[in-house]
Length: 189
Image (cartoon, rainbow, N blue to C red; front, top):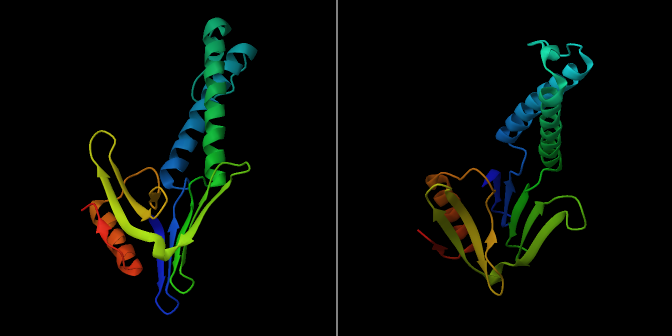
């Protein structure tokens, strides 16, 4: 769920940083797509200009129509996908924090979204309205393991990051820690 959790018992504050799109796997895939797309695009351009722009192979032997043209189009599509991946990483979509403050009696859930008028997603409510912390586990082809906050008069609020599921031990530990801090039951085990 979090990159780091800070509990300050003197202030009654629990702060959890939530990792968004700036994770190693996203950097890896953005780099791979960028390299592959660049190769296809340069191969298409090389076949058109009859000048070798690649180190690894000689695409000047390709006939521009249809081979060079198709490679160029694949390259353009790949560059657009790579641009999207790098922008999502730059904007840190999904990143943010969960903050529970017993001194003020409020909690705040903050996430970054895509640019626009709703870029900042912020939920603030009273801690006394929290009914429970719920663990949701779905196994199978697309496993999902997440923590949710059940609040009176609202839908369940997700607390964990999207993407790679947490281990069961980590999920249970974080759920129990939060439930103990808030003084509410832990559901779903």
